[in-house]
Image (cartoon, rainbow, N blue to C red; front, side, top):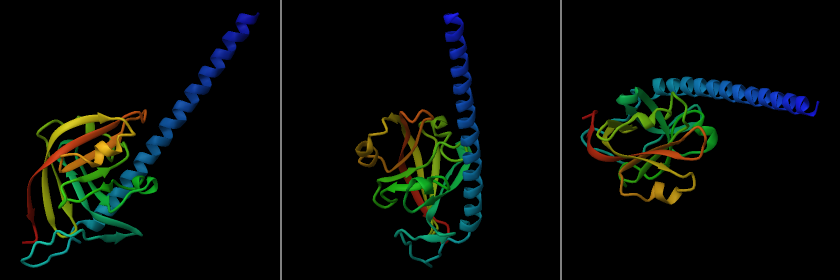
Length: 196
């Protein structure tokens, strides 16, 4: 009799855990979809709004405010088929909309961009390989070209390692268990201004 109760208890606990897992999956799917839609809407407002400065190339961080959020440009990663706006600074609410600048800037060669691991954001970062190319286009029309140099898995507490590296650009997102950060390290290989 006692073993039947224990067995029933395990079944009930198992059903509860399955329900929690399904709820988590559905919630993540909905958040992913919302983030994708939000990023697409912002991209339609960013493209073509880059400023032209005539013959000069301006490398200051120019900000465009869209719907109450400040954007500094957009990242394009052809290998994983994404083109996403990048906010000027980060917090957890902003990460639900678009990737965010976590540290640095293109001109200081310590630029760090963070995003959620939504499939429509940085969820496919781990698919990148050494030598893959990507670009960041700022609001002045400057296109910075990068090449993937390394992919690391860092612990979530490795903030110093993230922002104090020898890489020109670092992209990162957490894995689903939140125990590690997928970190793509890139070197700058060129820059041009498409308004010139």
